[in-house]
Length: 205
Ligand code: C5P
Image 1: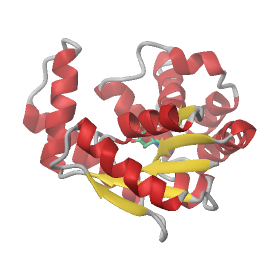
Image 2: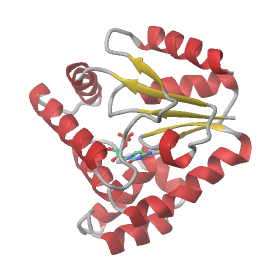
Image 3: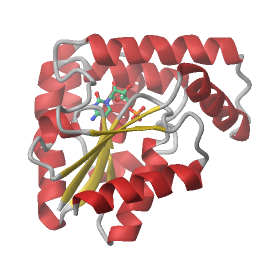
């Protein structure tokens, strides 16, 4: 059993996917962490995250412990992740990783292309969205909670730019699969979003 949860940044898909996994007794993989860890490796090297040769090498060398690094979040890591994510060689290098994870025991995976590319045959696919303003507000609160000062307008502009890159790239662009169930969490808190997702998922099982 594989459940695909896709959508733009800060739509609430990570929280939802984690809770769905817990409720169903399935492993959970936040696939954004793979791209973040690769981007981080290039930043550490002082390299350009859009460098295809170095980025592919970093993707092929990725180890599970790299996903546990504490410095995978924040504006620089966001930007580096979406830069490496536009490179077809990086995506190809990470594909087996994600498929092996899902096939081992079933899983809930969240990302941008799980329902379209990684597991197009997944029986349950959710595409989670929320308005740009609400997503920016959530990300801003999260940053503030971590003690990072940021301007709301700047967070909104960065989210929009990243979504545009993720949806506009040629390699596995972010988009809902034809058979994805759409869930708009703009007016929902985490509890209500989970209840809505749970009833959508139960309807498919
Ligand atoms: O989900 P998260 O915001 O952590 O993802 C970071 C970046 O990784 C995204 O902006 C996107 O560029 C990339 N990504 C992707 N495909 C996935 C998951 C993440 O391209 N399945």
